[in-house]
Amino acid sequence: MGQNTPENPVRGACLCGAIRYEIELPTLGTVHCHCTMCRRWNGAGYTTWFAVPKDHLRIVAGNDHLQRYQSSDHAGRLFCSACGSSLFGDSSRTPDVMYIVRGPVQGEIDTAPAGHQCIESLVPWIEIGDELPRRQGAGVLTTPQDATPMSDPQTQLAPSSSEQALRAAGLYTHINDLLDAQGRIQGFIHYHLGFQHATEALADKLEGLGVDSSWRLLDLCCGWGVPTRYVAGRFGCRITGIDITQRSIDFARKVTEGTDVEPLVSFRQGSALELPVEAGAFDLVWSQDGFCHVPDRPRLLAECFRVLRPGGHLVFTDWLRGEFITPEELRVFCEAWSFPGVETLASYPSLLATAGFEIVSQEEVGCEYAVAGDSESVGRGLPSFIQRVGAGDADDVAKFVKAHGRKAHLERLEREKMDIHFAQRKMALGRFVCVKPA
Image 1 (tube, helix red, strand yellow):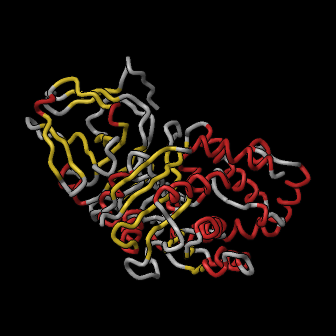
Image 2 (tube, rainbow, N blue to C red):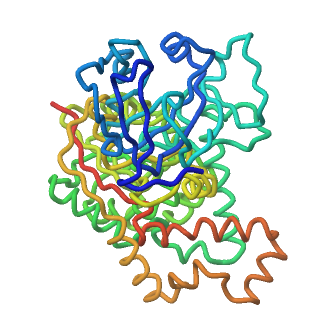
Image 3 (tube, rainbow, N blue to C red):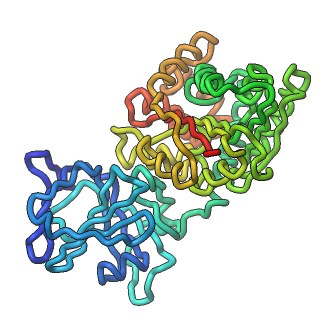
């Protein structure tokens, strides 16, 4: 694969040579797109694109020849006005990314095509001769907005939204069962990055909004319901927890029984893409680190908007793509956690605005939460950062492998890399406070 530096970039040009440009590697991913728009725009059976951070593309000549066509409500295609060469694409959903047509680029880049997208639009006169993964719809580029990991090469189509949701539910059922079998499920008081510090810090945002006992809250992707109970206890408000994993809901109900907050808290199984509640039912929607599991985020955010009253708030944290993670690391990490993809701090604002929200505040807190979570873990006698990401005690590992298999152990280690990725800023954590206009 190609290697370059800012002093030795990859170069490209249009057919007539009027437009010349330079690209600084690394790229964010490459894909073959079979959509009708790409076919009509490029005049070929499909278009091969790769993505780069916007500031990695430099137009060195012919900027006055570069024209842009608005091909959809969020995307545009850029071409040479003299010769018509198809060159670039952009999207308001990923304002920090440029999409480069591979054909006019000279020499090698650092990523090979990851697969075929929009395969439902494949024309009969194109025969795919490779074994790359194929999927319906767009989103296989590991870009901030569309970071969807490709499925196994033997899989012909990527899972649908409902299948992705069920896959995430299956993962957490598996995690629940593993922890329960080890007698450790009670030890995970707040099972997310930052543990209790994260819950308290997000609840501080509710304090600033004036949440009190009169408010009605929804905890979306509530898991075991520990933050649900914490919020109810701190503010005295009524709160409903919804999660797609029935195993988590059952456990949440069980541990809530007999507590002081039991009269304030209820749990129900349901999908974040089809919330089983009426429009305007809540004053605030709360979620911690759950949206990264939901495959259709525009629809997710639209559902959050629907169930809020005018003037209601959406307060959440979510795992994001960091600055330094490679496409392959991201693919493996997303697969281990059953993420359909991850956003960036820059890509969320347009998604939230499209859903109708106004952003009150947004910040990145991943490194802070990773450090706080490790301190809490050690203080409570749980495994430290090093113990979680290492192979672990030999006897414990042997028992685990015997009970659950080597594959389950390796998958567990892959998930535990979250601490490393957040500490190294390969992953990030966004904290958002949003409002539905009155």
